[in-house]
Image (tube, rainbow, N blue to C red):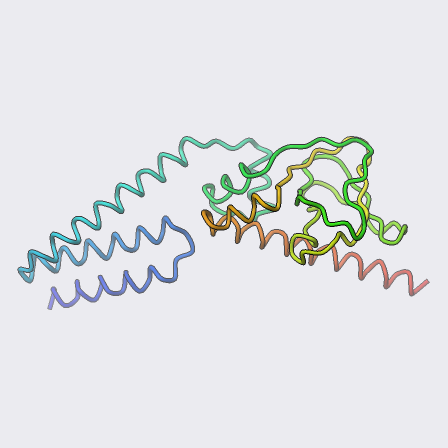
Length: 219
């Protein structure tokens, strides 16, 4: 009876691993399955099952320890932590560090940042300052910290839909589109978090634009 229960727990852990969203939990679930298989192998007298699962489990323990060391070694500033929680939907620290380290800080003063119908080579998020948005020479909205620039072009592959202008000094965190594309091959969870943040930004901007258009029609 007990060996059967242990064996079923092992299979449940393996099935559960297919629903995990992070590498850490994937390794944890597989490790739990290995422990159950080892226990079953000992109870049922199957040395080969014990041997292979001890080997597999040991490899996952080593990798989990490596991930833990990497996370402890990486520290985030208060600003970065704010962006991790509020812009990137509290993505885990490892994925956020992969996203953030792939970009760079840039400072602009009273400059045009994007031009309508011209595709920018970067996607950026505002860290400090304000940016005015114009469509067909008409002021549309003002963006502040946490808002993205160039995300529509990033998603569509076409030119920018608006002209954006820095009001005074603006600090941006910018990513080259080519860097984001190469990051996708190595850090899938990081790129997914980035794309989800971009889509949320697009929805917010579209809602604000529709509300502004509706107010103008009502006048």
